[in-house]
Image (cartoon, rainbow, N blue to C red; front, side, top):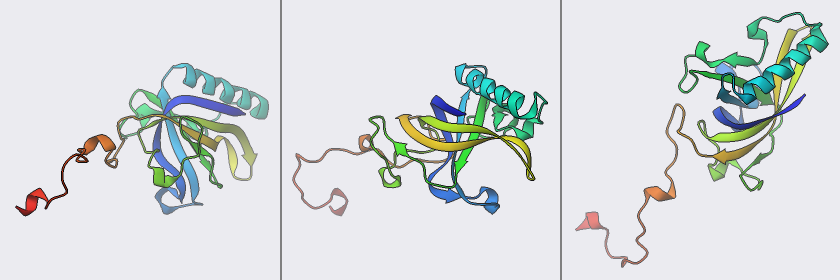
Amino acid sequence: MKVVLKNVRLSYEHLFEKHAFNGEGEATYQGTFLFEKNGDTHKQVAKVIKSLIDEKFKGKALPADKICLRDGDEKDAEGYEGMMFIGAKSKRRVPTVGRDKAPVDADDGVFYSGCYVNAVIDLWAQDNKFGKRINASLMGVQFVKDGESLGGATVAGMDDFEDYSDEPEDAPSWAA
């Protein structure tokens, strides 16, 4: 079931290069999305997951570690306290767009762990030889706004520099 996560925080951003968690398993494009515990997004996702469990597993509960929706209080990571999160991945690179819906690529430096995004995911029930679980596939991500970086520095922004366009191009000040 397709779900749009609106104005959620992006963490563990791997939208432009495939990544394998701890170097194990198949490398995929992926992101983790954080949102308020008991907020509208949490309620929306929980409702979809419940309907998938009811439909596929006849309402039989799954262990928490078999469901893609997780409690951030159980994860020792910056920014996760008091939040819920979902990790979603894709074997193929998904659309990444800016606020104006124009395509964004890695060189644009728009996406980073800590920014706010809208993410389109597909929640689905797995019941095969690999087990029973509820998974999330990544379908696309749209940048919404900047946020404080999670777990690392960001690149400098234009506001970090001075405008010297009205000054002569003499020898640099450090050369005097």
